[in-house]
Amino acid sequence: MRFRLGADEGETRPSLVLISSAIAAPDEADALADVDTAEAWFDAVAAALPPGELGDDLGVDAEALDALRQVRGAVEQILLGRPRASSLAVVNRYDTESAPSWGLDLDGRGDLQVSRRLWGPGVESWLGTVAADCIDLVRSGGRDRLTTCATPTCRVVLLPEHHRRRYCSAACAHRTRQARYHQSRSPRP
Image 1 (cartoon, rainbow, N blue to C red):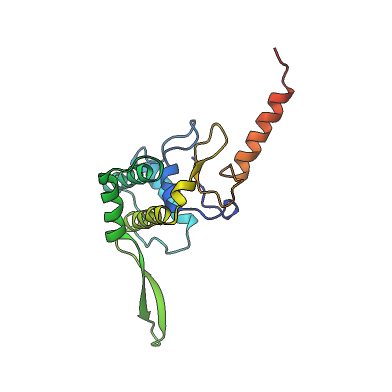
Image 2 (tube, rainbow, N blue to C red):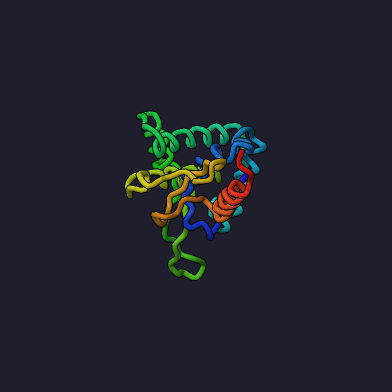
């Protein structure tokens, strides 16, 4: 199962990470196929984020799996298809009810500090982040720049930072160059 939140591929958008859980290479399974697979995938998401970003409750149960699938479908429809009112309602609900926010607190010495406030367990909180990111992609015009990796067997969705970027990773670019090289060296019938 491929999963990227790597710095070498630029900024990773949570909404694109969730979409890519379903549309990776054809030989890979859906990351949200069942509770166990989804839990492993979500653990990878949590591990790739800064410590404490998702809180303590990172378990994926049947209810969380349904929520992940529902938000994934809604975000995919909004960003890659023709949005329906039901998809907008899902994203707006998670943005309103679950998106983490920043708050001000006083520490033990009375000093002011900024802290992240989570509005639900790990999955719920992350889905709020995904919803906020989806809205930001639409608001900023990023939705119009989304593209699919140019490697024929990879269908990862990316937001290119540069107009010449065509691949989701250096590995996909290398794989495509190797395939072209081998095709040019093979005997012609």
